[in-house]
Length: 53
Image 1 (cartoon, helix red, strand yellow):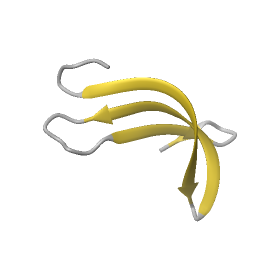
Image 2 (cartoon, one colour; image 1 turned 60 degrees about the vertical axis):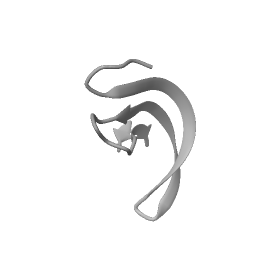
Image 3 (tube, one colour; image 1 turned 90 degrees about the vertical axis):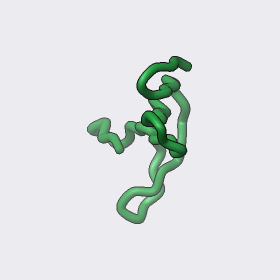
Image 4 (cartoon, one colour; image 1 turned 45 degrees about the vertical axis):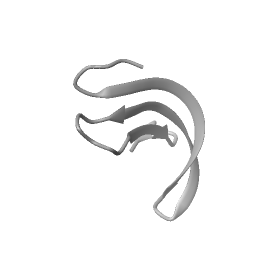
């Protein structure tokens, strides 16, 4: 984990996400917490074309 303007954790974890009403497998690549925020934002890559959300 690094500190600075935002907290960020880089990782590679297999996860299940729901998009378009369907469950899909994906790879969690980054957890990020914006400055002065209480929530974390996740970056997940999924699908044949490596879409992300």
